[in-house]
Image 1 (cartoon, chains in turn yellow, orange):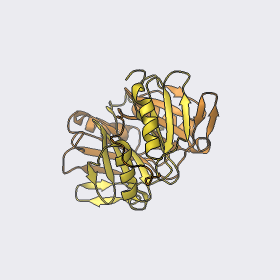
Image 2 (tube, each protein chain N blue to C red; image 1 turned 45 degrees about the vertical axis):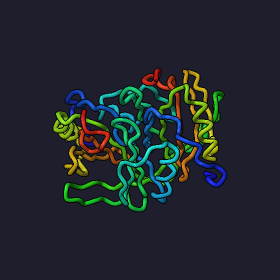
Image 3 (tube, rainbow over the protein chains, first blue to last red; image 1 turned 180 degrees about the horizontal axis):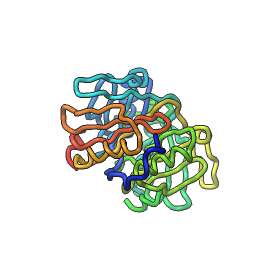
Image 4 (cartoon, chains in turn yellow, cyan; image 1 turned 90 degrees about the horizontal axis):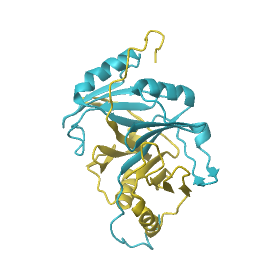
Length: 151
Length: 151
């Protein structure tokens, strides 16, 4: 970022929110089956390089096999830059307070151990667990953030 | 996941969407300043271990300094598991079609080069660029996904 030549020209254009959240995995088929079962949601797109889950309106979870997603894709409709990480990443799902104990039971039914549980001092509570690649997942009820106080 | 002992006991409990999307950085102060300027949004929380940006209602972008976030946090209100990745990750912001050229101009004003541009065959278009840690960011207009056809 070249800040020397660029005086602040004013406010940034608006954004609507976060469209895509990515998680990197070793075996795409296995990871996709894990998320499909965990969430009860089928992928809306399955390609060799990614599976895409429609988590909510305008919110997409992308599963990338790190060995394939690291390289740029030169398509007929433009360049899609490559990316891939190693090590455990984190993301969190919103859940209603009334479904908190159901989520605990569901994780137990699936044989997924809890790796943490937090009762936030500001309100809300979280269950932490891992996907099959060791990524750190969370389900959290309202209260946790200033922009997440109600359902 | 122990699937042998766990017959499918029915549908997963509902989720509301993706609450937290994380990006891992080397220098938290520098990265936070980058995102604050890029988005025109100030962090709602600044801690040594994370900065949190309120991107939209119920949507939070978390910046983690990988050297500090990798270890578990043993707090008085519960265990917060550690996580950290290396290498470039990806996430995308929703933007309205009418703001597409404004975003191109704004990135130019900030001295941020485009690393890719895509006109998706199914509709919608995307600008790709990098944050100061090399993470692959995208702004995308409606059309791109089956659950993102309108603004």
